[in-house]
Image (cartoon, rainbow, N blue to C red; front, side, top):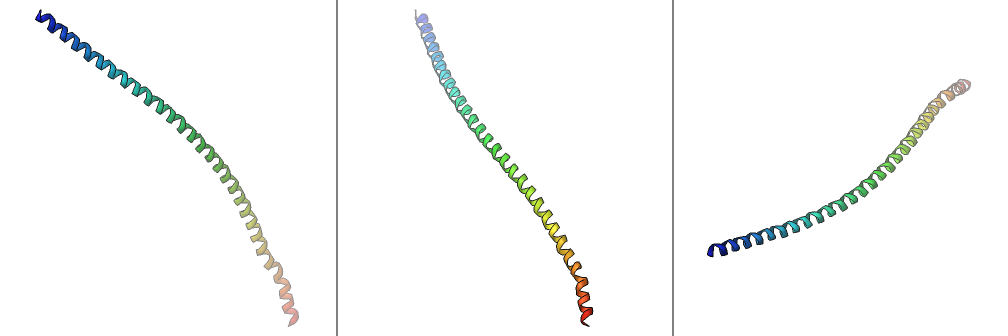
Length: 104
């Protein structure tokens, strides 16, 4: 009879331990699911930020291309003006020599 009572107590204790483990597993599962949802929301947020950053990069790249093109045009104009400025003194030099010769 005592052996039967001890066996019943052991089975009851095993059942309680199993129930505690099941409850803890349920809590752990819920925590894992919550963490999974949190990470999924974070992924969505990061994807939106990545898209915004990529869009901004595209705009900046376009602006850089435009600015580079304008710089090339300005450099070409500056080179053209420089050649024109260099040509002017040579064109004026002969008449100045003639004036000097004429005055002496």
